[in-house]
Structures are given as C-alpha cells and as structure tokens.
Image 1 (cartoon, rainbow, N blue to C red):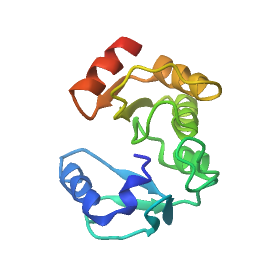
Image 2 (tube, rainbow, N blue to C red; image 1 turned 90 degrees about the vertical axis):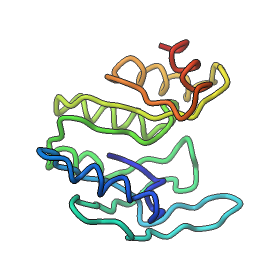
Image 3 (cartoon, rainbow, N blue to C red; image 1 turned 60 degrees about the vertical axis):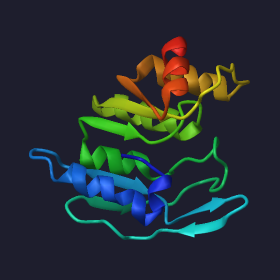
Length: 155
C-alpha cells in the first residue's frame, strides 16, 4: 500500500486488522511527514504498527496533493514483488500513475481510492494520470455513494 494519509497514527489501525488475515504479507509505504496547507506539518506517528512492514520513503513535492511522488518507490516494489498495490490516492495524482507503472513492471495488480464526488474532466497532466490509472487498475474503491457514481461513470 502507498499512502500519505497513513502518517496519521489512528489511520494505521486498519493495517493491523488487515495484517491479521492469514496468508497476507503487507508492506506500507509512507512519507516521513506530510505538509498539509492549512494544518501544517504532520509528522509520521507510529501508533498501530504490529504485523506489517511500515517503510518510510522520502517524498518529492511534499504538500502538493496532485504532484507528489516517491523517488525510491521503484526499488521498494522491485524488492517486495507485490501481487497487489493498493494506491491510497486519487487516480488523477502523479503518485497513482507512478505506482501503477511500477506495478505493471512486476506483474502486480492495482487498486486506487477516490473521494471524487463530482464528475469533472481534469486538465493535463492530471487527466493523463487519471486515464492511465483507470486503464490499468484492477479496481477502484470509492469513499461514498456520490464517489461510486463518478467512479462508475469514469470507467
């Protein structure tokens, strides 16, 4: 899993629950911090970390929701050889396209997450990231009913 949101410790509880499943090996890539505009800097809080690997990777363009990525993610994916990469990011973000590309290189499937609840056509380059992610993803997860509608409409 790749997620900037998981720098927040309480969000990590679901990872411990997932990791308790038999035959699941879970590695989660997070940045050491996330710079959130009006909130400030959120440092990694290691609150629920039992049963899975939490890998901290430097992030380029930290604080830029749609343009951040992990320069070292390729090495992590190559070493771990996942069957599935859960991209805990909107499909129109650069990091979603990055993780999708890296998954293809090792034959892994991808799943992305979206809260997008209004149908919108994004300008380049975000539209390109979105089209690429949708085209190659095995599934998309939606955060609410309106996001389900947008997800279905987009493909």
